[in-house]
Amino acid sequence: MSEANFDFDLIVIGAGYGGFDAAKHAAEHGLKVAIIESRDMGGTCVNRGCVPSKALLAASGKVRELADVNHLSSLGIHSAPVRFERQKIADHATKLVSNIRNNLTKTLERSGVEIIRGIGRLEGHQKVGIRQKDGVDRIFSAENVIIATGSDPFVPPGIEIDGRTVFTSDHAINLEWLPRWIAIIGSGYIGLEFADIYTALGCEVTMIEALETVMPTFDVDIVKIASRNLIDARDIDTKSGVLASRITPGCPVRIELSEMKTKKLIEELEVDAVLVATGRVPTSKNLNLDTVGVETNRGYIPIDNSMQVISNDKPIPNLWAVGDVTGKLMLAHTAAAQGTIAVDNILGKDRKIDYRSIPAATFTHPEISSVGLAQDDAKALSEKEGFELGIVRSYFKANSKALAELESDGLMKLLFRKDNGEVLGAHIYGLHAADLIQEVSNALARRSSVCDLALEVHTHPTLSEVVEVAYKQAAQQVVNHSTT
Image (tube, rainbow, N blue to C red; front, side, top):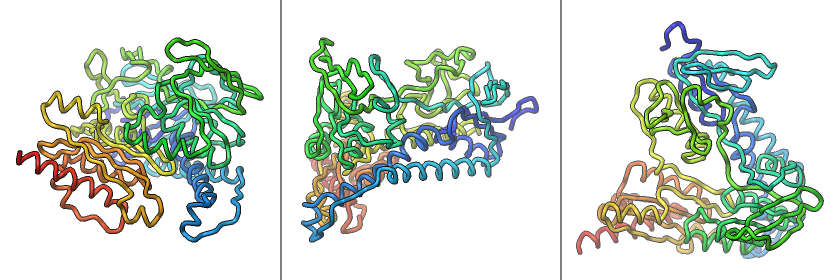
């Protein structure tokens, strides 16, 4: 594809899921590809995020299940006291990371991708500089460049990290020890997942949220039922509307809590450990972006829906960005989709991304998932475009499979247009919510109407009937709306 004077058709900076999918897809279509990685192959998701945390959640979830004496006795099962080995749980996560990282690396090598270890940066248009681990600095040319450098945990001012008593999710996935009392700063999906892990393994948790309510990024109806089960029913104390203004590592860890609005000191806590789960920030500082005239927005690289980097509202030729560094939907599968779309556009196809149809999940026990618009956004859209917003709720307590599992405390909330039935969004809390959301995601991607979806036959008895019931309820509202 490239002219003879380019070293590569494509250079990808960063080998997380976004960079991996981009490099693999490009190589499979005949491009000469290099991928640059300064840390471990697989990026955050494989090494410090999705993969190890799900391994810990799987193990701790089994402990929680076996320790739930009341639930098991209701099924006629009586188990002995549960014993677990922290190190073996940690080893399970470590082994999984190693296997997936090795498989990913071998896949790229088999595809013909050249893997270069070092820190990548831009050196002007169609040029990439690399500082290798041995200190050697090299510059390569490429017809196209994709930036996929990901993100790192955000540590607010006043918080000192020592990696042992005060740490981020990057350290927590190692499960080096189990503190008797741990404070978790933040109640988003990272904080919730680790609260799930720690409480299952016998730790006491204090969850500290700067905003007025815990779980501020989740749907309000989902929060009501999820917080009752995931927080109130467990050994978790919550403090909302307060800021952890200073955290000092040690034994014990000292936390100064200030009132969020006035910043006045209101309380001091002493705990055994603190997990800082306050979100993530883009890894874009050392990319030398000014050499191509790119200005970031709080560190995020601006892109269009083709994944092309933009400057002054215009796309920069041959420069693309994908994944967390773009700040769109900071999810591994979003990054992977963006990477493939960027390469397709490089290959001459005209592809755009549909963020609305990309689902998200929190892998607590039970799970939380969502796709599409939040209720407030859907309401704003309905007012803007002049249609009536439809909302229906389907409950797990009416589902035979959930009842058989004695796991019937769950809810699905479906948002749709009453004029044509188009699905706008869905939010689910309950058993296997992360799997159930995919059906709605597919419907949303097709811009399907609930009137058509309600005719699709679902297997009985399965949890998927929770979705079917919601579709049928929504379809009835569309029919009634059209006849009035």
